[in-house]
Length: 394
Image 1 (cartoon, rainbow, N blue to C red):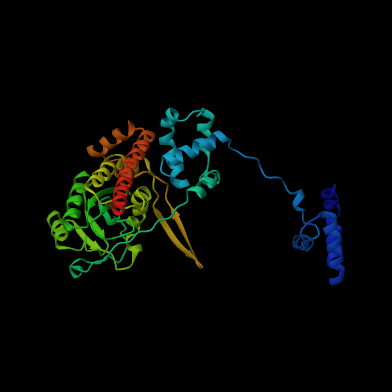
Image 2 (cartoon, helix red, strand yellow):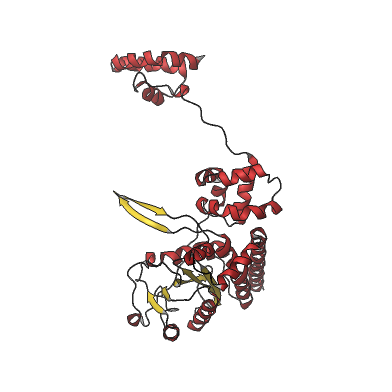
């Protein structure tokens, strides 16, 4: 009844409020508060609006939920198994994942599948908001700059504006834990600017020989020719060994400006999504752990990240006042970008083989194998820490 009386008399209260002096408004607010129970500040804002404005209570009610709990559960499961991609990438990967989801999800009816394909990225963010808050975690990395041969390796001051694959940014992610002393494993990470294709290898230590050996292995495995590489100023890259290797294979070698991380923005982003988010910040320092990490990098992670994980590319960046507006292209997997690059031309045999592999690969089973491999690696870390603690006590 109080709500109905408020709706009926709100217009008259506003008229009286506008005409009253300060003392009269105070009395009017007391009367309005007694009738409605509104907070005094809210009552002031409400009565200060135009006389004919529609009251909040009479506004149209919000639409109810468009997607049921079955859609939310299926979306959460796919999101988790896919490695928590953001909504635009999750939207792009659903058509590839849904055919396999029928084998792994109970209650995945045709209606739920249609709803999943129809749902927008923004609505995905709403449905996954609570899960994201619980899983939120942020980690940081560091690298050590070097000085050797800097004068002989040119600095790349502009961003590569390339339209063909083969131009790679490279970096090293350390797995030293809380201490950088001794020898530890590093993840040698490479990403292609055009397609987003990413390769990673684990090497023990930061020696130049290990970096060049891993780079040669990746060069032979890439589904396209390696044309140029760009690195930061770390001593693991700025050395004669890598310089001679690039000259031998006629590969252009450039470096970024010191302390300008945005010069290597592509690989810095991959360092997080493809390495640090997966392996965390623990210390890995044994040949056994290096072999286990490489088994994942060469097989399951390689296929998951390049076959089933869509990525977006920045198309345009414009400044509007103090804000920067960015426009991205449609999310596509690195393999799909590689196929699109060839267009109407015959697709190379090595790319055709990758398409056949993806067609017969279950991404849910692939995700489970990744989890199993990570659990084995974590178990070795726990065993090492327990052994070290036992030695300290003894």
